[in-house]
Length: 222
Length: 213
Image 1 (cartoon, each protein chain N blue to C red):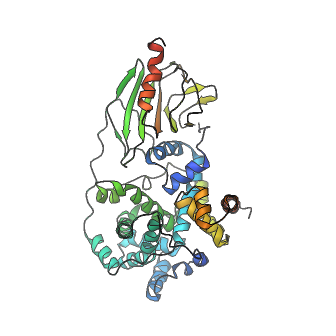
Image 2: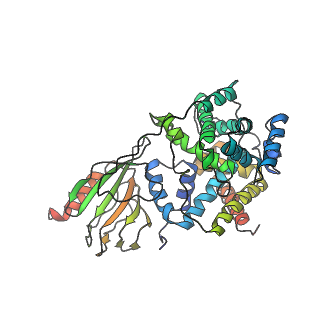
Image 3: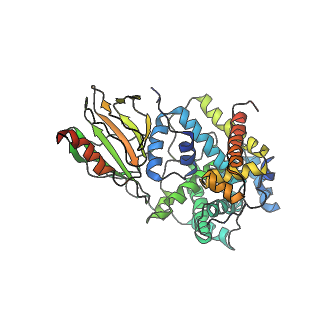
């Protein structure tokens, strides 16, 4: 049913180093990205782009962010079985929502990609609503300030982001593929086994192993 | 006090991924709002979602997509919808659940009311607030389909333990219990079920003793 644009090798190549993450966009955009991230020192270039939008409605920053994330959001939605035309529209809405909600972005709590993932996820859930356009811009759960956390908890949040990223980069392509199917598509393990032509036991152990590695990295044991 | 009864890791993962049915997700979020442990767990899965999005294979946008987006950001944002009217006497919903619409409270039995909750998503689930008076005992019953419950106010106990605000309970046909509400106040729970039979089931289980069966 859902086409799998990730057949072949899942992309884990772009995980090392901030610039490499943006390998999908042109040199000019990368350059503007670099300059933005120099101006706004923070965790990742994409974080800086959102902050630039929040602080001075920076259209160049928006363009760079769009070029990088819109095709990924579209790919993610197509993976979930959303028809390509609607996936394109939702990806547009998601990035426009990023522009409108940029002031609510707090890089201490979430990285740009996690924040955009939440926006895209919620938009997809809202796609059945009649007032979908309004839904794209009204405050939702992901905007609500979290209940106050201790400074330690906030620091841990940011560390967790980095570590999940690092750990994911170290998984084998096969592990990432299985994880992606199980997480995004909520495929029953038996279905994943069928799709990939693998024994059920192999799929189960891959998912278990992948999650265990992520957790080990998270607890600083890896 | 932090909750002692938690959703499974799978439930938290599918809630974070956005693949859980909306009513069930509402109940899981009611728990997460009160539980630092599960909040961190959900945060982990959202970080994973972000990292997987980052490494997602890009699907090229059509020509002119960026120009259309640049035009869209120049237009004023649509006005947000008016906030849902708050009915008097409605129990306070936990953080993050204020987007739901509450229906009319229905009297089920002395001391027992049910308020249907409408999530903003299309779903065939039944989501409701169940309010049971202090000290009441529900007759022994089982559950049609898969039902998730989160205690919002007060507390109740059954043979498996005591459930306080924030505690999460998953039940299905295999669980048979007879909950007892604590004497010091009414108990309000948020529940979601995938079974359309639940209301009849619920009325049945409350009226059973009254009808003398």
